[in-house]
Length: 213
Image 1 (cartoon, one colour):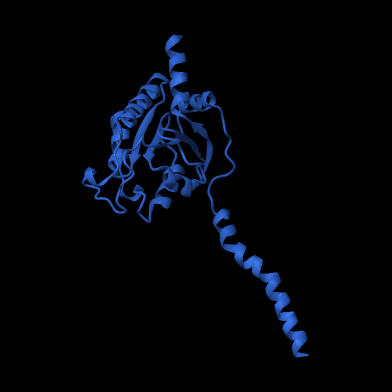
Image 2 (image 1 turned 60 degrees about the vertical axis):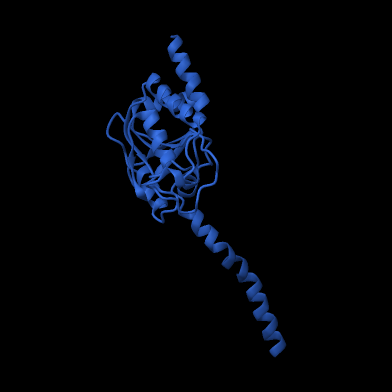
């Protein structure tokens, strides 16, 4: 009788264990706020951005060194990895492309890292630095979700210039290349949808095409 009971308990544990192990991952996926990306073409994304109503998350330009401390001083750029000359040129080119394509920009948000603020300033001549967007801040995921789900003022777009890993964690988006953009549509109900990606080369090509017309 005891042997039968022991075998029964073992069978139950074998059946239940996979469900226990899967639950955390399932719960995490279930609460991702992004539905399947649309993967719209660069041209289609630009047309939408020209009308306004979107949130664009942009990774900063190329960074140097990769010797940054775990907790750098936000008031001292010397403790951080900063933009290379290539990163500065990428940021300037990004701003030129947005202006050539007549993409209206309202707010530009960044974290406090120097490379994010400099990228935003070089490209768009403004930035609003939010400490909750810093990659080591425990509020960063919720802060990004809130910005992605907030509808911009009519006829404009909201920009976020920040770290790419934080976006991936908050939305399920892919890791962005330097100066690459991810375009989101707020749904007006506290959620958002990823529409696609805009590489800097794609933006430059579209901007050049406009210049030849």
